[in-house]
Amino acid sequence: MKTDEIGIVKRPRFLDEMRAMFSFTPEEEQKFLEMLTWRTFKKRYVLDGQNEILQYMFYINRGAARTFYVEKGTEYNYAFSFEGQFLVRPQSMMRKNKQTMFVQFLEDTEICYVPISTLGTFQSHSTDKFRQFLNIALIKYTEYLEEHLFMLRMDARDRYNWAIERFPHILEVISVSQLASYLNLTKETLYRIRSGKY
View 1 (cartoon, one colour):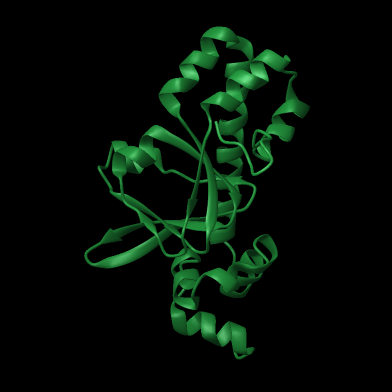
View 2 (view 1 turned 60 degrees about the vertical axis):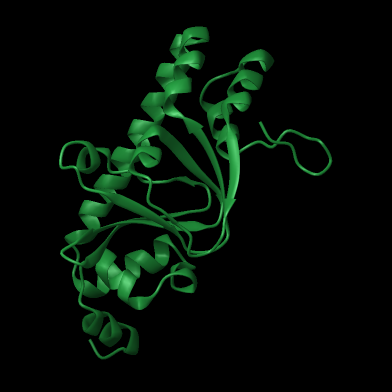
């Protein structure tokens, strides 16, 4: 558990959301906070530890990251995660398809993370709350997938507009090529859309 400069225990932003969904006793909240680890990654740092990505839940308290994989020498962006979001981890691709995923931090990024294995400790103390926590996480991930699949059915211009509305600062931290890959568009198409010639 990490404290800030004046000795106050750091709390991730998602804690307020969790409090709104179900109540913690002070003891339960303290136990949960003790599971958390904080780390700041520098811009462009690449996290390529397959096991590390699988074994931890990462929450972006400040900053931005992209999750990507490499196939036949080409990078494919799987997802972008921004401040106030959990890092998207495609576990089925990693476990079943043995696809190696990487995380690159797009700016200096403060991460709060917890080993998934230690959540069992929390589970043993508060089974109902633990199940609610997991259900909330699964619902949020399902909502993300539904939103992403719906986006891919849009025409090219609407995909671009969706990305800009969903992540207003996205082009401040990623390249046009990366955005094109994420939206399943060619770089040329994206340039035409941005220049108003599409």
